[in-house]
Image (cartoon, rainbow, N blue to C red):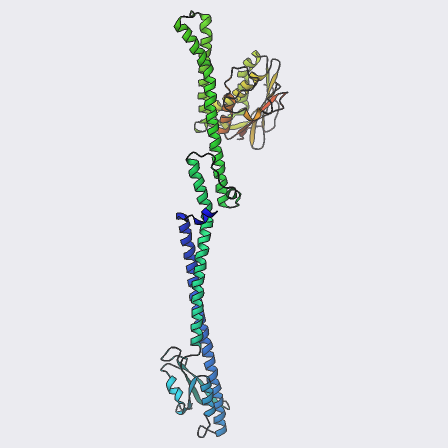
Length: 469
């Protein structure tokens, strides 16, 4: 964790940091401008309201003085001047014709050239006017001339606080952006380090448990990498085991051939047919192993070379059973088949025929004389099924996980197989998008089930009517 805190952000982290800071800067700028404009306008509106109230108050006092004196002559306007002074303005009183009746000195000092809406020569300067009304009749007007508004100081204070707050917000946003960027990129940095270590050959390199447990997209990425790393490690173990198994399979016949040929070369034995026959058998065994390996390689690449077409799976299985029947009968094993008249699928005829034939051959290899093999073709809503069940000795529970591994042969094999047939079946079936499974109780038979994606034809019979073949 300490190393994560001091690790540089990296290109992605820096980009995230810049993006977050730009967003924060834009937001703070907009809010600051809005606050400044709103504060200024609010203070100006409040000042204008106060000034108009002062003008109205001076007009009322002037109206009272007018009414008391019966006209502007002799009217005591001193109280009106005091009201204006209390509002920070000078007073000018006009009669109905616009002539000046009374003007205080402050009125000349604060007056401006703008209209009576509050604008003047200097910032915040201006004037406010109000009519003097007596008994509902306008008899004149008052004009209050103001100097600098009392809100100027408050506005300056407000602006100061807003700008300080904006600077503080930007600082906090930068710190938060840096933390968030590092928090987001830290798992990626860790995963990148794991990937580099894995690429260098450290097959034990895996994402941290916290990254694997994260319920985020980064957690999904870590789990996907972990699964991929497990697959690569497993594939390498299988490859190494396969190399060892192939070497073991080839060593025995090669050793026998080498020893026999050396005896012939040294003249220790005569080249009689009886002596050459075992050497020929070893050569045949070598050829069969090489052929099986070639078939396995072809099966593993089957997905790239399948010639897909619509086919009748029932007819294909019936043909495979017919071809396997003589071989099974020679071993004393009976074979039968049941299933619907037609089950349509899309696939490669030769590849699927090879897969079914290999399963039947495997059953014959392990069954005892007198055992039986029963083949069933069936359907589900989405798949076509081919089941090959025998009542032979079965497969021990500990061997079931290894049935489809390369070069694996059960303890009951007769030694003729190379242990590749069922691996070929799995590769061919999976190349068709299907699956194969095996079940056995270890004592009373084995059942292989091949499932293929179903492609119904226009005349397919869905009912599983038993038809003896």
